[in-house]
Length: 267
Image (tube, rainbow, N blue to C red; front, side):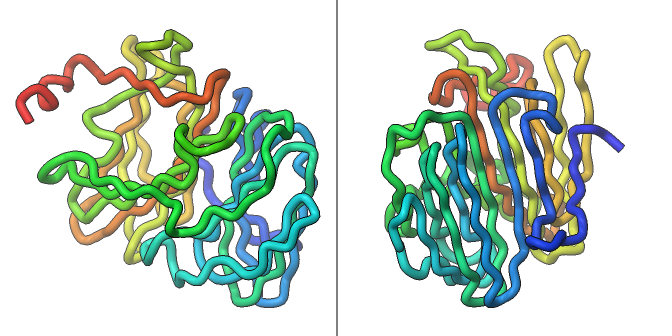
């Protein structure tokens, strides 16, 4: 199996099903975990030299960070429904939560110094955006875009309708060449509705030294260390993915594949 496709494990004693670190991914910046918690179960972490964005994929939890109690957040029954609640925890702090219902959470991390306060990011603070036209239409929920405070993290949810493409035309962000392109590692956490489906994602470079096409099932993570990375949702299956990006500079500037950029000019 490709090293870029990470399958979920059975929940460990803390409910963790994904544990992607810079070391396991073979890169520098992005860390990503997913937990499936039972009602009443608690979880806490020290952030160390990394900031964290804890995204409530489903369910409700009572949360705190940096010694501040933020009360109960969450409420949607699946990531396909409604906008997310999230908790931002700075570096050099601690966050904790107690599940009030069965819930699934994603923990997104990247290097930081601890310059910002902890805060809750409510649904009313999540920016809405529709990109593309026709079968390239997808719906974006900006949880932690570059216009909102963070030191390294960029976090976004995307809903791709059945039969549509996303991250398309193919683009990449693997060179530190601002203002034209930024270097950002990226993870895709895929969920399908209904869950028996799959998504197709291709990750490739201009010279094809990397060129892989992956079938991602419900709950899989695709790693994008470099290259273009379009993804398609087959007919009959709605696709959700959670993107986490980070790099040496907190800005998203991408480069389109020249072979496919023509469609933007004719749209």
